[in-house]
Image (tube, rainbow, N blue to C red; front, side, top):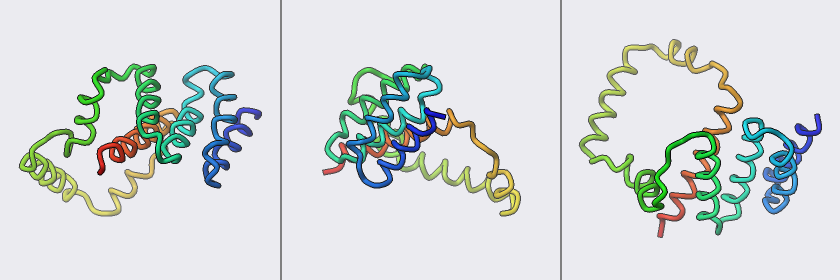
Length: 148
């Protein structure tokens, strides 16, 4: 119950635009629960860094640290990581992107809208959702670092 209250306080602080207050609550969770259970709080910490605007490098570094603890194999050279994420569609040529889009369209056109919606309503595990949220925050920070 206490963990949920702290997570709710961190989420609410973030939603109200008080990103500086988020670490106070999220760190209390991170330091008192097993790593696997701290992923939603880790995401809130990373998101608070991302929302602060000028901490893009710290956002990416923190996200990479969490992802490495989860076993993701991420190159240690920042330029390799950033070019992988921001270099177009993972560094692929425009022709390759168009080819994959056509393939996706071909596969998706075999289904009607009802089948796609029904299949898309499955529940996603909380830890998997937290990892996707961490990737989302890291991706946005990478884009901001790359933008002029």
